[in-house]
Amino acid sequence: LLFTLGCRKEIPFNSEVTTPKLVVNSLFASDSSWAVHVSKSLSVIDQGNLDDIENATVVISTAAGDLVETLAYNGNGNYIGTQIPQEGQNYRVDVAAPNYTAVYGEDVVPDVVNVQSVDTMTTVNGEEEILVAQITFKDPEGINNYYRFSVEMGYWNYWFDGAGILDSNYYEEMVWMQLNDPSFEGTDNNTWSDIGIMSDLLFDGQTKTVDLPISMWLNGGLPFHNYRIEFIDVYFSNVSETTHFFNRSFQLYQQTQGNPFAQPVQVYSNITNGFGVFGGSDTEVYRIN
Image (cartoon, rainbow, N blue to C red; front, side, top):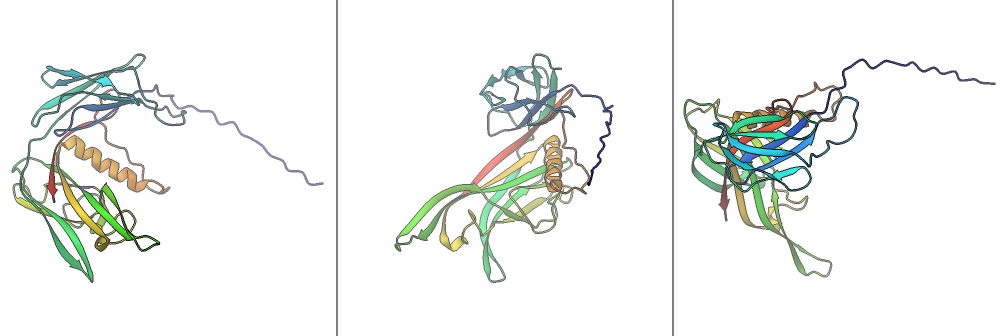
């Protein structure tokens, strides 16, 4: 007879069970009305997703204490308003909910940066032709500035069906860009991404031109010669330091996911008594038809 003996050792849990706190997330911009998401954090022994908070009071005010508006609940933890943040203004969010410690955060909408030109051009990489979106702007001198870039494209995809008849679909989507400028942060040279972030450390006060080569493969399909482009929107954001720190830390967090040997990354938070981010940006959209 073969017997298998087993034992189980009880290991006491001595860590403090943290009381759940409010989690407030709002990346607000000068091109859209107020929107804030409110949920609760998990303790070390909890499992599952963050639960939305449906009965919070969310108030937006200026840093000087003037009421802007109280946001209305819109479902799924989202609270929305009708006012639009203004460039150069400092704002504060206060969030309270029953059985939770009240939290708050403060940040600014940066001023508009002078964009001198936005255009597209084509270049050749080996035997392939690549479309490049190009933006030129004047960086304000003597202050720390942080920028975010992305590109959206509307296009028709054409193909012949089984009967030899030309067919098409229309798409609008954010496209991948090749980040080959040395000022881009958190990426290796020539990395492809749908978002690029940088500071003005290398070009403070200068006129800066950024080239954004666009992926030739759209919708997981065929290269550009099977497409007709309707428009290209270049999103150019002058973001606050808070927003930049959040973008950078979240980028690092995503890069370490699935790597058991990576050092844990703490995503940046500026919410006092809770978690999350309240960060501003001035976002301008430039359409190229």
